Length: 423
View: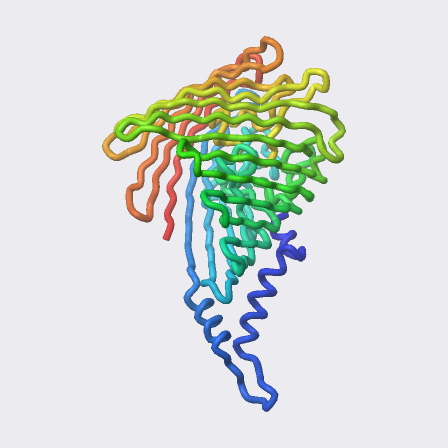
């Protein structure tokens, strides 16, 4: 549970630092009089002038999944409050609290309740600490951060926050970001706990929510270089020892190039390759590859993309390439049919068109899914997203997904109405 994990040392330190700092402002000198140095005055100012932000996200989600006899309807509000101090002696603290509340009836399976005749919508109610970290930037071009924090690397294909769900995935971790080399960002993170989207309480036994936190000993390394002139080159190594999910433990090494060329009309391109094998206590012994190729054209009015996203299978081991910490909703369709890679792998061939109509962003994407190993035709999907910033503080989003099953899963339709107010 995220709120239960808050008692662990990795979570307690930022709070202790803040309380200690507050105590310093009222320190008593040897002669019994109140002592307030220039540093403590600066600290008071850092606390007083810190930034307080509010974010409210209402969402209505409807799911019609043929695997369940009843449709699901979820009307939820996520309320978020974030406080970040100003910098004091190269120190900064952030505390962020989320609350997810059902507005109206909760006729959906959130993997915590017992409405198993309804389709699944993984947005359980609860209040939790989403982020609580201490950052220090006392070294040139370097920031160290300790505590519960958001980690989104590259396009979040491997490490991300799953920000689409009302309960975000964050990490109890120690991270270092360094930009001392020209055009280069070096990132290292040690993750000792993954706070997953299914919390704050453990869900039903036998479901993905049965263990909402994963104890881990994960090393995450990512290097971004932007000095090529043709785009961003990234290299990474993700060594995931997931103690509470040993079958998802893996070591992954990869490279990614993403960029654009042109002025009025831009040519877009992405090429990525990664190789993965079992790690630590994973009971399987396997090797599998991942690759993504994407090309597109962006004009003033329209952007089109064609791509292929492939997670290979090791047919001898019966295991496929996996990305357990990714923001999976961004990939392989909004219907979320492939959150776990099938044992025969997956090939996702997709195309998208997006543009603005009367100031409203409209995007349509088509996916064709097939097994990477064998001849199975999983099915296809069409996704539609319509988004508009209706006010500087208000964002409106409509989404629709229609997955037509063939050799995998069941026919599924999902629709969302979302309103976000931030200030």
